[in-house]
Each structure stands twice: as structure tokens, then as C-alpha cells.
Length: 146
Image 1 (cartoon, rainbow, N blue to C red):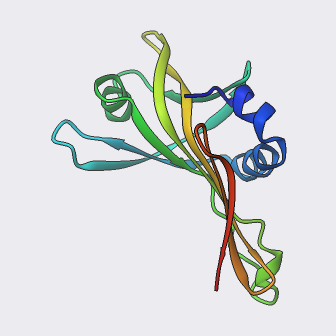
Image 2 (cartoon, rainbow, N blue to C red):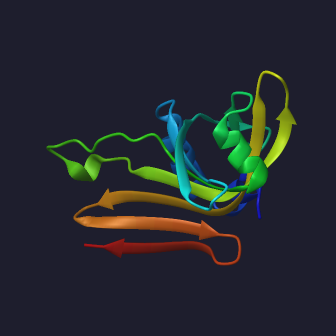
């Protein structure tokens, strides 16, 4: 697994694209696992601090309890609709997944950083959907689809 800064040094262009998608707006969507193994979707905010991708939570929030029990997490960037008249101008979406490591728990908040196992940027290029992904063991891969 890798920190954001580790990933950024290995794939700077992809890191810049994904970071731009996560900072385009404030609210991202996070997937965690409930105690019974079923998925839970929650709103969250993401910060890039100290070379880490950081998630926060209110104290005792179910998403924080999910991550304390099972650290697997996926986060989808805030969404921005493609321009109707020019879909290729869409900046795309970013996705990350990995394991959340709790770095602080106080009576006012929980803070986690994400050890990355996958980073993805999806966008439209011409008339193709382009998917650029990074995994620690495979590096950067670029695929297109119609």
C-alpha cells in the first residue's frame, strides 16, 4: 500500500488529475462495509495533508465505526456534469480505494489517512471513455472504450 505522496511520486500526472477532481468541489462519496458485510455509502470530505489523503468524521459516526472494524474503503470524487454541448470537455471523475488508518480519535472527531491500493481517473477523450488507473504492483494503465 502507498501513501498519497508515494503514489504522487510514481504517477505525477495521474495524481494531479485525480487531486483536481477531488478538490473541484467539497463533498465526496465514500463506501465502507457494515458489520454484516453489506456496503454503506456516506458523504465525506477529503483533504490532502502531510503527503496523505485524509478523511474525517464526526465522533461516533457509523462510517467511522465501519472503518475501525474493517478499514477497506473506496472514495468517489465530487461529481460535475459534463457540458451538454461538449461532453469531451468533461474533466472526469476520480476514485481511490485502499485501507483507512485511524490517526486520531478525539471526542470531537475521527481522522483517517488512506493507504492506497488503487487510483482511477475516468474522462471522455474525443468519442472514447478513457480510464487511467494505478495499482502499486502494476503501475499506471490506460484503457479506452466506446
